[in-house]
Figure (cartoon, protein in one colour):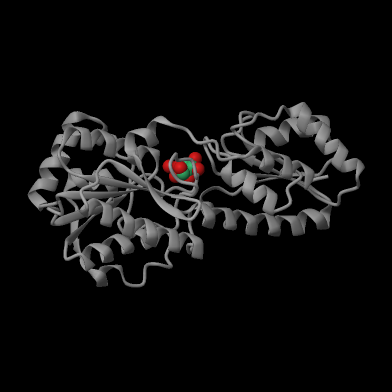
Length: 327
Ligand code: F6P
């Protein structure tokens, strides 16, 4: 046990607010435990290119409040091949890295799964994605911040929507996950929310909007998750407009602004807890695990279990709340 001497840390896939706070926690916990830490730039791509940097407590000063990731990130096609992974292993070995902490989403976890089956390097995974779509944790890093960013945008759009009496379609991120859409929709008082997990037919939406118009609402906001099956906010707006041409309809795609910004207090603390736990468990001999939050407890889930399961994070109550609050 505790034979690890040099922990490699990297971020991979889409960046998320809180990744820097997590890198900081990994580095400082490793330093506290008397270990070397090596930052790997550009995720798996950096393992292939050998872009390594030795880190210490000062390398992570003043980053807890910063969005993005100081280690940069990438989606790496070559790492998906056995040859790519062999090259990565040789580079890590030459650098003396004998343990890994990976921060990212589903693709990052999949890469870690393949790599740690093939090569004897212990690895711990930390869920970092604004989508909150990973099994094994109630919350992923960045999700809380992104949701707050969306709420801020909804509030601002509501001001102009109410002033003009307009119908707005706001598209939010979430390729397969409606977490941001549902939670920000409830918090922003949306009249309707369209989710990838629960299809809403256009006719159903039109009925709902007709009822809202009948109730003399001064503005209407429909949140459309990027992964909604009707094909995004522009398509939904176009189809609604065909039936509802008297409505002054506008579309706002929030896009990548949801990925940036200073992490919320929740994300900073979660990142600190997860980074700390990943290093502690790695040094206790754990490998192929993901770190997660259940209730207020930090837990571990076997990587394989995390990858083979989907967690439905939208409760029926939340779905009903979103509808009742819009009446
Ligand atoms: O997975 C996070 C995420 O922001 C998704 O919500 C979105 O669909 C995707 O990444 C966008 O990816 P990219 O930044 O590569 O366009």
